[in-house]
Image (cartoon, rainbow, N blue to C red; front, side):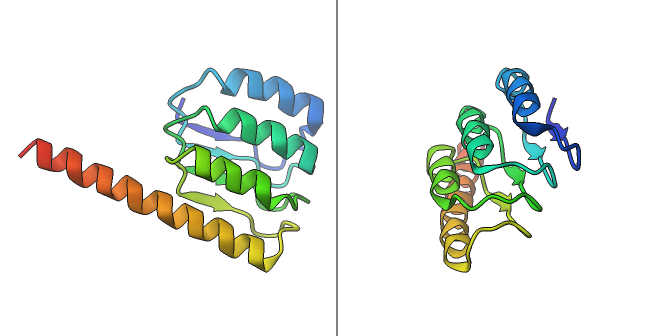
Length: 124
């Protein structure tokens, strides 16, 4: 399982916790989309706690959720260095938070590129 698409399901907090128990065992997930699920900041904390463990995860779509805790997302990006894209369009994050999150995601992307280059040099 590499992609989890749960767009517009209005899963709710209890449903999300059940799904996260399963997702946490799927170590090959590269993309997860939780767009338009009415995720709260409390649920976001649980989601991010789970996603920190997924070391192949590159993309997360949280757009359309009423989330505003940038610290939780920044901590996720600082912990999970494989993450290079988080969509926060139409959330309650302010512009400064979005800019800071983008900065950390860019740093992760640069680090991932350096790792790929080093791996490729090893094969030549």
